Image (tube, rainbow, N blue to C red; front, top):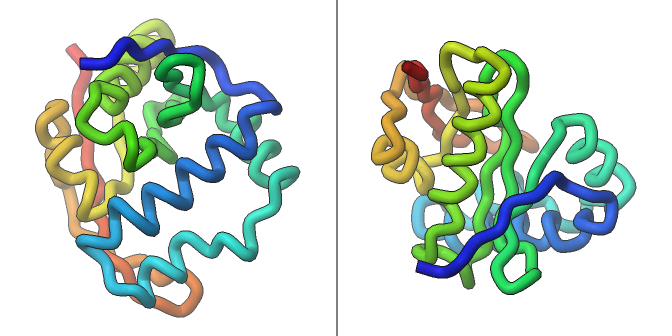
Length: 158
């Protein structure tokens, strides 16, 4: 397992986290979603760094670094919502996701949040199940006119 460092998101992380987001969708998730779904979800030509930075800052995001390079990122809100959790395909299977999940849980516990919840992709479902989440409902959101599949997953914190 690779040594992973977690720190709060900074404005200078916008380009790296956006790249991780797009690569995780277009490479990793492409095994579970159609090309049309991948295009609707990733929308790289519609993503702007300033908007991305504002969104990441508003969510109090945090990043996972491997040898000083952003390898993944996530967030958790006060009510336990994990809006985004993405790992670079190059860092998949190296402990980055596990480090991010430990940070999510630690932040939620410090905030006194009783449960975590997320809308999880087909690709990430097994990872979240392994982390103790369970599927509450299968969902079919429409993104850019394209029907997707994801799962509302929940984990109660002890």
